[in-house]
Length: 471
Image 1 (cartoon, rainbow, N blue to C red):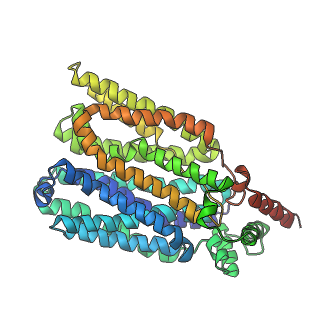
Image 2: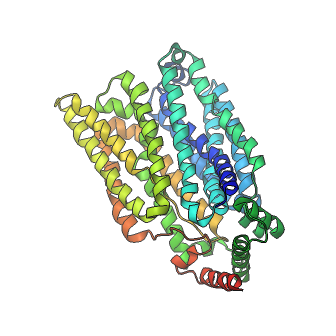
Image 3: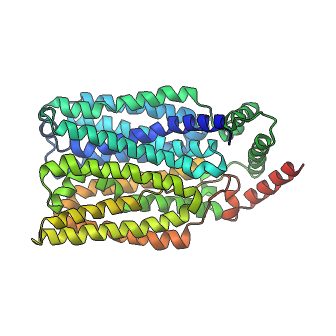
């Protein structure tokens, strides 16, 4: 790939990936904010029910937005959808930071959730549609990398706030929540500099613009064979799918499409059922259950975990295109289960008075769990159902995540360290699921993926594109 193409694709990937950074900021900030004394007193948030709703309502907003953008992503485009996400996240952040009433805080969190739901649906879709097939896996992992970067930076800033006098007045939590406006406005501004997805442009009949976009993304002339082949493949795919009509919701669940959507929904649900988000959200509370001091639980251990989370994501970036997603998902399930088994076993021993040193081995188990989660999860869907399919799978992620996040404070209160058994079981279940049911899609173009699932239209599309290329 020409150097110019690499640089421009990095710009496109980074710009869209800022949407992931915004989500990471939310994950990294709310768990520690919930423990700040002035925040608790301002919103009377010391009880389990209030904390549960403050944390989870964000993800309910995400779920609603993911479903809404099943339509909007096709109508207004992936680029405009991401721009909306940046604007809405800034508005939601301003409302949360400036609120003094619980109702305003909740509304602000719902708006922020609506923004991240839009981003989580459209950013991976946009990245996949702009990236060359041979780099699509690692490029889309950039979204996950940016999430972990947001978690790390927000968690580090929060740790500094908690370690100062700021946590004892409203400046601390208002600053923590308000800083999310910065990446939100950055996302909005940068999106003006990147193109529309070439596949979306074809859907809208803007073929000349689509060809120019492909050429710019590949840093090649418009008449270069590689550019023409990719363009012809997209055009032919769209024409063949047009010939059998636009995809309604009924078609999303039929045949090979249904299989694809089912795998996507299950992968996204499984991602949340491993416990990754609640462990990240409620780190201080979970570390306190194991037996760590308040200082370690709120300032030191969360930052170490967030840093490891960021570093481990690079493993996924450099291995997904080499080993494939199926292998990484299976391997990740094994490692996650092992890590949570360590956390529960040594944590339980610590509570039984076996020695405080075992608490640190229990914490290492959480780090091992995170190592297993460092690979990326997700499915690619055929062009005319891609928005609907991605929205459904993403919505399942948010709905399951919202329910688990809502339930976690109650589970931690009633089960204590035994809550890790629940997440261990789901991590163990992820192993046979990934090995037996998830197909490998490494190195396939988005149009060729239909063949993996037995999609006749995609097979004809690929065959036709091959004939065009041969000519």
